[in-house]
Amino acid sequence: MAVIETYNMPDELFYTRDHAWVRIEGGRIRIGVTDYMQMMAGEITFIRLPRAGKDLETDKTLFTLQSGKWSGKVMTPVAGRVVDVNKDMAASQKPMNEDPFGKGWVALMEPVNMNDVSSNLLSGQAAINFLKEEILKNQKQNA
Image (cartoon, rainbow, N blue to C red):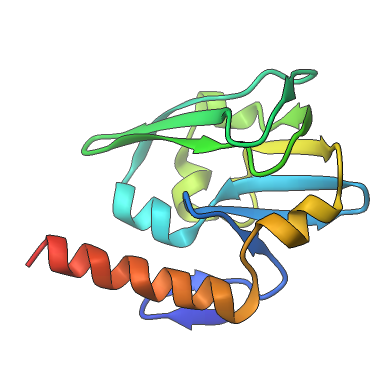
């Protein structure tokens, strides 16, 4: 696992430019928010989950989040069908902050084309470089 400053980045995951992670699980993908996103947002207080069974195109809103200081959305990383959601997140969003790569997952999807995951998302050094750029950009904005 890479650690960039204080942010964990598991090596086996793919990443989006809106700070979601994607894990390939057979013919499906599991999606959640990155360590960077949850740390920048602070304590997540609300999540609007996607509906299981819904077909979504790439870059449509997958789910929305709120914290005491921030609100935002995570877009669909690849076109596909939402086959399951982490219903526990509706009652308590704590796992998103405490275990973002485990119990804090949000949605499970069946992509239309699994090749889109590796071709459209960031991984390896490209993901690390992107996170470093985001950290630098945030530091400059807050200076």
